[in-house]
Length: 189
Image (cartoon, rainbow, N blue to C red; front, top):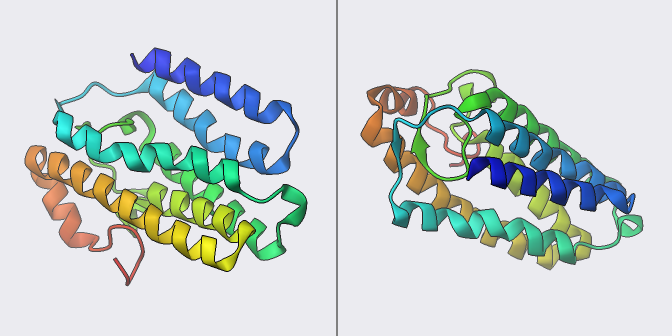
């Protein structure tokens, strides 16, 4: 299943990059890393429940519509581009740090506490939030705010589902949560 998902991701990256739009090329780095990590995925100690997997779907599916409605690249401001670039870098570094512990749906693989995971427990989702917010802001400030609120709610569901699985399976995750109190953004949440 993961191999099929990985090849599906590679195919979508190829299609995204083929039109030469710099926005799509930059954002394609994220699914490219996802595809590679799906092929290298670590064996699962315990999978999350069907309900926990379903709680992740809004966050997983949100990126497609947001990217589709983003303003044309020529209309992007320098600050939107910087926000997008920061989000891509944070996401790619975070996913690369997870390495074989990455998975699409909640499962107990291994607790990672190095790299950006020293400061927040879900830095890849912070990167995703920045990418989605930049796309919303490319349309208007109001759309940027709405996108940020919806994305935060969707990511919150996903974070809760993942943390339930990790807390149930790893006592080290409880200790990690005490050492790193911030789920998504330092000093905020």
